Image (cartoon, rainbow, N blue to C red; front, side):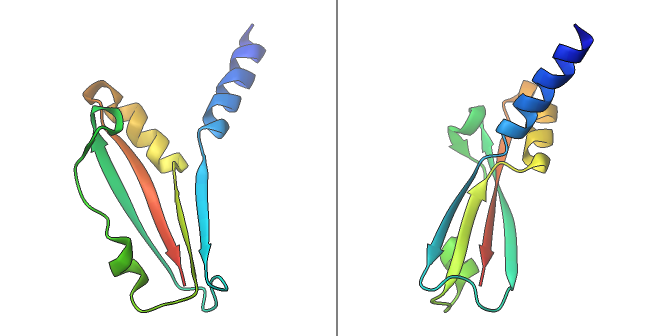
Length: 94
């Protein structure tokens, strides 16, 4: 029973680390990365801050934009879950 609980916990933990990736132009060329975190209340219904991806991209024409729930976001959700707080990571690689 304990072994099944550990396996199920690991599956749930790692399946939640979903990332959406969009490659613009030829993709990243310099390797410079900027990361910001978007916070939400009511389990994603109310944004608490604004992450401006246009500001993060700047004048770059070739880059990759990734959004997703990283392990840190899962930890934030676990701690802030009773307050309905969640987060999502936004990463731009130029």
